[in-house]
Length: 387
Ligand SMILES: C[S@@+](CC[C@H](N)C(=O)[O-])C[C@H]1O[C@@H](n2cnc3c(N)ncnc32)[C@H](O)[C@@H]1O
Image (tube, rainbow, N blue to C red; front, side, top):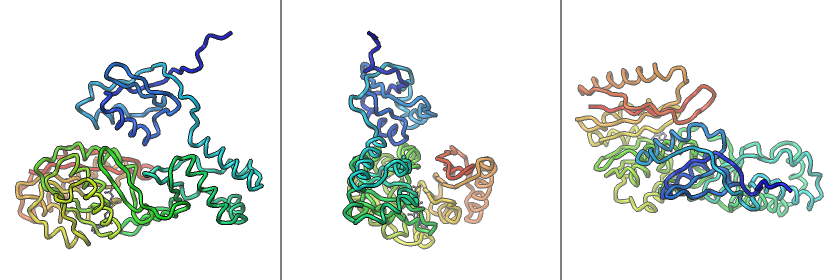
């Protein structure tokens, strides 16, 4: 008889302070690094959380996100207990769809090879990629079904992903307001609510975009101390950065400019839900008109528009107080041009400052590589101190 204990498995773990373990687990889950098949284990005041072997630079990211705990994080190997009856959502989805196909007298083999293997979770909504169930075989099956049967299929997918609503992603529109184009498959409407690092967000996923890929940047901005500061967020959206700056960075006041009425509804909801409605002024409409009304009042300007926020740089500089402040510039930049783009940006800002008779010095404090936007193209954020 073998004496190997099959209920235990050796795995990479990240050891993190117990009091931060919930937040860290949600980050690991979002980044698909957490091994849900194993149970975390407590070691004194730390929790060993199971992660996949290919954990990338998560250690550095966590140290940046939680600098006060950076000396406590550790990566090591440990033996952890397996979760009983652990079945991944993907396997469960396959099982449930197989049953649905059999119940409705369809052949299963080829169809099961073409079910989605990834999705995005936004609160109680799962968003499937745009190609999901759109190939010829699935379209043929769905065309033979009554709407009640199709509803049952989507319901099974929801059950396996433990959500109540299901949508299919369409490409984010290239229009100025970055409209979302989600098609709802199950559930009446696309309103979703979620909490990220203690900040509440709510929005209609069929109408506005939510970029899960920017999660680390939202956390980074929320970690910057802004006590007492007045901030201008020129492209506020649903409050991706406005709300963390109010809730976590403790900005005194944020002037949030936004042109999309659907995003503004979500921003109003978020401000109330986070109890910061007294510290936000929403400027509805084109920031070409609202920024000039905010001249000379800001300690910091946030310019979160992709692919480029350059059109707002001059107006944003004019918003800063006469003693200067900070500016955070989002931009999509080819990887090989990041250094030259940084230098060019500083030169352009220096020229703009001269036009408004400001003798400011521009110091690059940080260049954050947020994510790959496309092959070889990085979404970066340049933090510049202006004095
Ligand atoms: C990309 S979204 C914000 C995304 C967020 N900063 C992030 O990185 O996740 C940009 C927002 O700017 C808004 N916007 C674009 N042009 C604008 C303008 N000229 N004035 C005001 N808002 C604008 C859009 O409606 C959209 O909500």
